[in-house]
Image (spheres, rainbow, N blue to C red):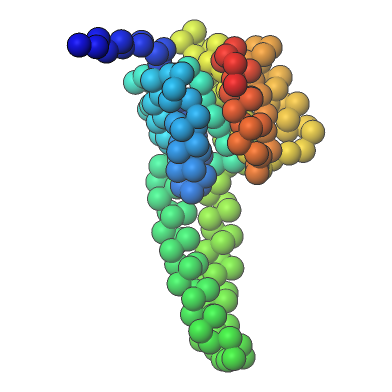
Length: 195
């Protein structure tokens, strides 16, 4: 009779603040696959600052991965999702009717698409992630939470502003898209574990 040996793995609880569902799903899958041998991994996701605040009030996280640009509220995120469905419908109509670009209906759908895109961009706060992490730094409970900013924002000023939120060694910044190895190495560095 062989005895089964149970290895107790430390917990790794990650908060993922990202408004793009495809990126969320892909990151969750890849990170779980990589870290599940070393950790009991849990990844909670939020599409808005409001949702992230609710999660961080309820649970203790080992790490946060935060997109700099995302909606402030869940209602804003829901509106953006509805707009994206309508944008897809406009594009589908336009593709089916591209021979009739001068028709009033085609022009109307084209204008509707532009308006929906503009409305959605207004609902995304360009500094929501920075504001969120600054708020966390003021709380004893979350002031030392390691944060990986994973974002399309790559200008030097924004990166410096994000890194300066500190404390030293507790903030990293990666510009999307980044190879999985870079993401793993950044997370491992923030957690002080081998990648």
